[in-house]
Image 1 (cartoon, helix red, strand yellow):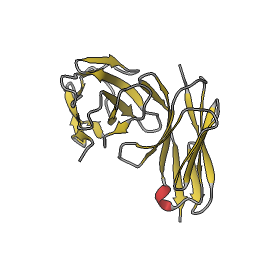
Image 2: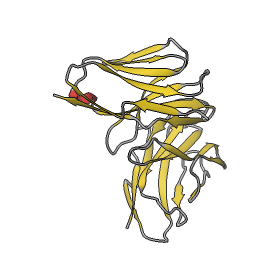
Image 3: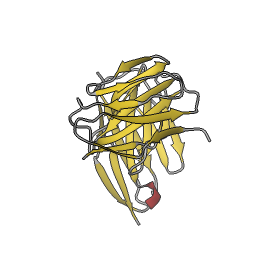
Length: 113
Length: 108
């Protein structure tokens, strides 16, 4: 069953804690993305990667970090430097990353305790 | 930088009442225009891609059209299951810029 798997579906973060959101894909797509969605706002790009071991900052990268050690995986760490982390986080992929449609995972809702 | 604006923010229609959603952008040019549907608590689901002014695409009760500065998503005789948030996005190189969406509610 091909697709994008995000986990966990719900995540709670304590003050000063780093948390990591998982994103795995078996579509053999080159490009992977992380978006943040807040109520009443559009999706905002955090980080993206077009090839293994390379990634670029999006529009709101501060307080986040990523890695791309394998083509299938693109985990996102929300660090303690991100002061307003409560949001719905979406992972997406595209075949080559060049002005193509995105395929989205089912999302992770992160909340602060 | 391209700005993407969607209107209206929310739209309530009676079942069978046709209407259109708008997506406008500030930078013209040959870029992809993408429409997605998003249900609450889920990731967006791809609907259409348009690249050229004058291009149209259809899927069931939905039809997307494109001009130089805007796109419309026409919904004909909608049903309650068409209720969702509809997002549009513009592509530039490796990134998509999203609008804030139109929340569509179809009342039985």
